[in-house]
Each structure stands twice: as structure tokens, then as C-alpha cells.
Length: 283
Image (cartoon, rainbow, N blue to C red; front, side):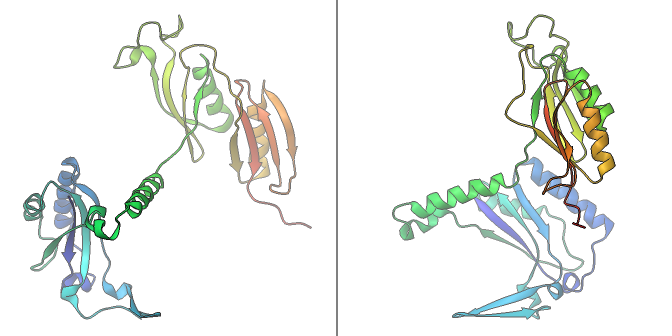
């Protein structure tokens, strides 16, 4: 069951008094235990109501009131979202919590409604399906995506090239013969045992992953990496370095979306678009 664990506000929290280092450490350790137990799904502390606003609903009217709000005992100073087996499990965990305030304080535990609780109002289940779909979309909003490039046996060479050409930073390399799990028989082309199984690197703020793959048949097509820089000089430097021993598909030129833009295919077959951010003002 899901529960919201609510830390009630006190005079000290509403006054904006910060917790001691000792309390912060104790709460950090407590949160770590919650995470290790697989219980904590979210948790935040809230600033005093003096920095809040309240919106009152009266029919079609909406009235906004600035804080602070007088009813301290009705306010909250923080919360967790937990997934527990029972209310008793939640109670047991709350009892282990350090006192989160400088004075006596209260923590409320509130069960969270599930769509099954609204079955009478959703006889067809359509609203439940809609809610489930929204949950999937919300989860995807925190997703990250990174290109994964296969170099057909030239990964080591490619990483060194990008380090020199565009200042890439390689954070991790693992070879097939370093894998904690043995590679299945017949999976690798002969001679690929010491090739790179997985590598992680970054260019500017972009994270990429790479591998030699299992054989030398990898090729690139249907996509390009877009490299955006802040100046003409950086653009020209990166473009020329990446194009070395490669092929220029479109020379650097002014376009309506960029003061300098060009396309190339590097010597490994990876397509690039290199450009200066923004558009220079028209004279």
C-alpha cells in the first residue's frame, strides 16, 4: 500500500530555523535506510508558509492569498511517499524516525487512494486505464536517452580520435575478456576477445555509449550526431578535426537557423552536424 507520511509544521519550522548538522546527518541516515528497504519513493522538506500562497475555490472564483498562514498545527513542513506492506509497517518505520523538529512534533500517516477505490465511479474501468497511461508517461519524463554506437572493431581508435578532435572524455571501458559473465560460445568474431564490449564517453554535455560489437560488420546510417558550439572558431575547429580522413557532406555555411552549419561523415562512418548556436543578427 502507498502512504503519504506528513511531517507537521511547528513554530521553529515556520520561523525558518534550520536543522542542526547532527539532525541532518541522522535524517540522511534514516532516509538511506528507507531507500535500502525499498520503501521510500519520494520525500521533500518544505519551506515555511511565509513563502507560500493559498488558492481558495468559491464556485468559479479563485482567490490567491500570500502566506504566512496562522494555523501552524494544520500546516506541513515535509513529506515522504512510501510503499509499504501495511499500515503497521509504516508505523514501525515512523517510530524509528529521528524527531525532525527542534521541539515536540507530529508525523501523520495517510493512506493514498488507488483507482480501485473509485470503482463505483468508474464502472467501465476507462478512468483507471487513463490514469495508468498517465502514470507511464510520467515515468518516461524522467527517462534519459543516449546514442549507442557500434564501431565494428575500431572503438578504441574512435574514442582516441574523439578525445583529440572534440575533447571527448572517456569515463569507462570494458573489454569482452574482462566481462564478469562469460561471452556465449560463437557470439564473437575470432580476434574480438580483447575488443571493447562497452564504453561510456561524453562530448560537452552529451553522454554517449559505444562498443566494438561482436564482429566487423557494423555500419552507421539514417542518423547524425548534432554538435552545437558557441562560436565560429569552435565550430570550424571541431568540423575540420572530425572531417579529417572523413567526408564533408555539406561545407560550413550560414543558414537561417545558424550562423555557421555543416555536415560531415567521419572516418568511422558516423554522420555529424556541426553548428554554432542561435542566429547572428542581420546587418
